[in-house]
Image (tube, rainbow, N blue to C red; front, side, top):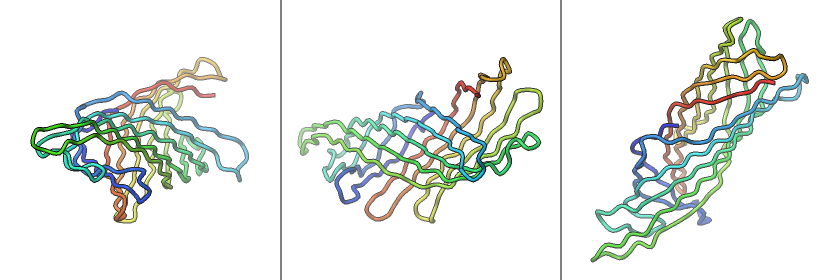
Length: 228
């Protein structure tokens, strides 16, 4: 997944001391390669929702200026920073259309669990109070609405798909959207391998007075898939 060249990240403790970063974070990376795994679990019982599971990791390295955990980084200096964000998505959903005229529409609810780890290195500058470094971690569950649309071109193995997870109350916004094209190899009727290429964009913006988060990730991805 491609990373933004610059990313502002303002994280503050929510009162339990689990997460605290308050400053300006600038990414060193123009692109990163991260792990993204997903699975759809479908069954024939209409009243019970189907299940989509996702796992994605995003690792980024950069520099932070300002203050961290209530401690000031020396003026004019930047502290080396590593940010790791792991996300688990548990999505129960219903098929509104299930490959009807080669079209699928799914609606459901996503429980996104975000684990964030931040490590800020030490900075020592003559004439300033040394910054001794900071590390923190936090796990946050976020409920999102989920929608997915898929259209397949008959007899070609080619499919186009868009899905989105989003929630907003005007102040706090979270969205995670993906668009892709894939090709399925019709080798056997039981297991069909395929290739997919797509674009994913994600934004998390929270400001409830105690916790502030502003993160944005987007970029191209490619992968393999198996249909059972």
